[in-house]
Image (cartoon, rainbow, N blue to C red; front, side, top):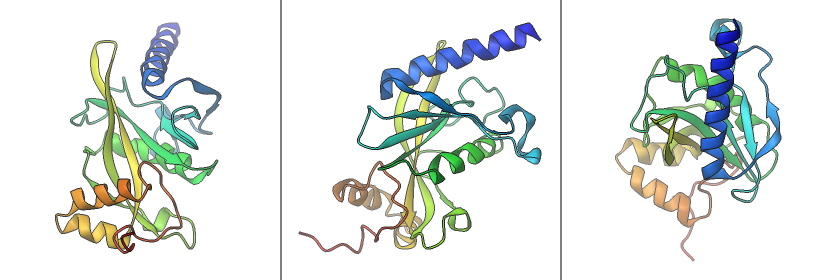
Amino acid sequence: MADDTNEWEEWWNARVAAVEKVLGKSEEMVGHALIPFQLGVDIGGAADVLYFRHHIAGRVCITSELIGCEEQVPNALGNYELMICHRDDEDWGPAIISRLAHYTLEAKLEPGDTMDIGSATPEGSTIVAFLFAEYARFEVTGKKAGLLLCVGITKDELNACRKGRRADVEEALKKRGVYPYTDLYRDSVLRCKRA
């Protein structure tokens, strides 16, 4: 048992150190899941979440259980953590990536992929899906790793992605100042009039 604890702690420390090189110092508070990730999704296990306030305005949240997890299906980044950004202290984003972490053990999520999440969004939200984007690449204990950003997109933006216009959607999200944030109640960037 002591070996398992030491290995977990070594991975935790290495993971946090690597991510802090990208995002700056993490907050003291860690969002610990009520049921640990290792116990599995069937009984409600979820990933712990780290918070960062010095990288961009607002709050960056990332899972902190996946890099070093041999069960994860690696993507182009290698092992990766899920990331979401909010302009404020919104709790929805950290909660959803914490639960979504288990999905990465079953399926590969690649930059450029989308995922329907409409049923998991708060009432009245205009966000219906995530667009996944590569945010950072780095190494942890000599292994490829990275951050996969989850950006909330509207139905209009999702439809455009499905029609092969993902690059247009990403460009519009950046141009309109939405990227890298998930704004739960916003208009489509594809319907905004040009200034």
